[in-house]
Image (cartoon, rainbow, N blue to C red; front, side, top):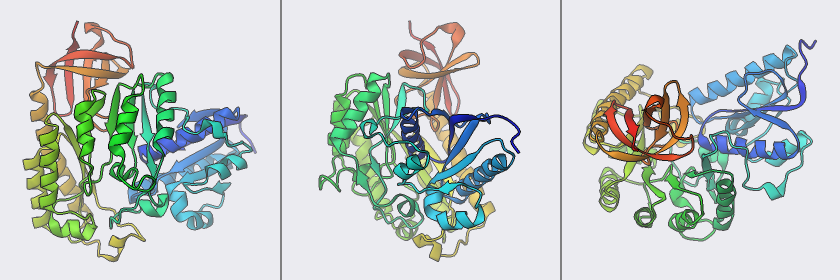
Length: 437
């Protein structure tokens, strides 16, 4: 029995997981809006007739969050608060048959490559003329910009190829058209994402074309910042750094997940590199772009990681001093190459190692931020929170990196605009400053 009236044409899209999932949800929402659906994102309201959950299936915590969200939606359906529940995304791609058995009250499950089928189920037409257009969930002045789908890398711990398939680059001309469309609607920063940016072009152009893509995108009028996420260290195209030096609107920022540094762990992870090669690459990058902000991600607790391995990783982080860093505990994922190994590092030890690394990084970040006090930086302002205008420098990406806080009482600039800020104070993960008049 229904307990309230829902809006028949309203769809609530719930996104879990990474920025690549968010991009997919935005494409879906753009298609639904073009079909005259009233679309909302991550809404707590129960006014929608239909809920679509875009799931993550990457690691155990993400999978559990996705399952909990599905169960919550099914319960709302049973209570008559919503009418339809559809599930899409990585978890659904990877475990569709299991989900259909375990949670049969979901109306239909779709994989990562079933957008057309999902739209057809909703009696919506796929609008080919909208290719590349999305309904942004981010503030309009920045947008995640997916340049490729899938991954060809053989990393032992990663299930992405199982869920996303082989690497497939989007042609440069299409991406430029998409960038122009975003710029025309006020987007000023593009955050380039893919499972592996550095592989871009090999499949369709037979050579790495990330540098050429960057040059083409940097020519798009209105795009003030281009930012690179998720570069793989093996086969890194060094000409990308030339473009950073050539073009003012290509941020001196590189997100390169390195995962570990002990040779035996890197070999077991099937990363195709060594400690010596990794250190040489970091040196090359920093020598070529001395002002670069280098971000990495590390995994601790991988099968066979000894105290000696972890200490080597810890000492390396202390020595290398990444500008930004994230660390995560290893998740033992079925059907991956590493699943054959014994998950022999206890969970409490994994957590202790993550905490130790992040505490170390906090001190590194604090020292780096203190060195910025008294200097001026170009800042893009994202939002207002309480008494502060909050923005970022070119060395910081949304959600994951440092922020710059300016008191509203000390001056004002519009959200989505750039302004020069003199840094007056710092803590481990934030900078404070005043607008330069």
